[in-house]
Length: 347
Image 1 (cartoon, rainbow, N blue to C red):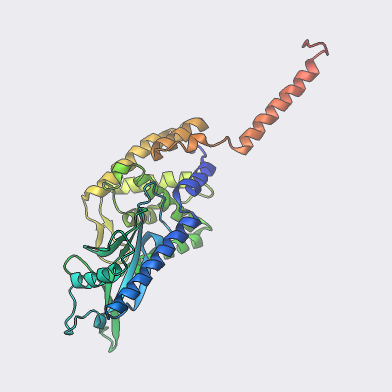
Image 2 (image 1 turned 30 degrees about the vertical axis):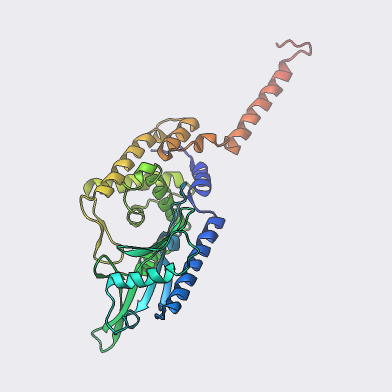
């Protein structure tokens, strides 16, 4: 069954309303770099060891961040310390809370910020008055026997009371490989999948009262990756078919597996995944008109309804349709001239 073609409309919508502009990404990168310098200076002042590495992770690293009208942007910047660095003055290992408090204290030494850094269960957060915030998850790097006479590095996150095996860099590598694999299967499909992730995340947060109710960005990313349906030159159709596939899966089970380890992003019955599934079902009902014999106006109205926008209906008519209309009227005028007897009368 054919789907009314709003492909060019959807690409415009994605560029204008969904993906971040170069200026926005530059501003976020500058804030991230400022946070790193503050941490470095603060740790030096406190005479503590520096992290082995600091790595951007999450949606910023995967290039799947989306615009937010409230500027509620979450930039993840993981801070990785060697285990030997995370000790107190007596040489005792820091607890997860103590490790986060050390980072928080170092960041807070810069008194120019109105909002001091805060310790959260899985990160240290620095909020900016514009709405941005930078989350700094704290990791320790341990060495353990690899079973072959050597050692391997193990990465553990300072969680809520425990050091939890975790390495967000692996999730970023997973997604980038997914994009590369899709591009290898069919040119451009990986890039399209990334756009479908953004468009889906944008929909999931398209109403302010949905933001705290719906599932996480990484869960959406995993679901899109697992059920992506590519369509040459048609992001609108790829989005619709991918949503259908995700909805069918979530009707069967709302469990979402983690992409790189044995844990779960969401357990079966998870309320936030159910909320996302139900809203996806509602959107598919609104978009059913696309598979009927609808007009462009009706199709655009449906997409606006889904995204709670007025963007699509404000778009001009496609060039080819406008050209066809002009051609019709030119031909009609020519026929009129032939029939006109020169005195304003038509035969």
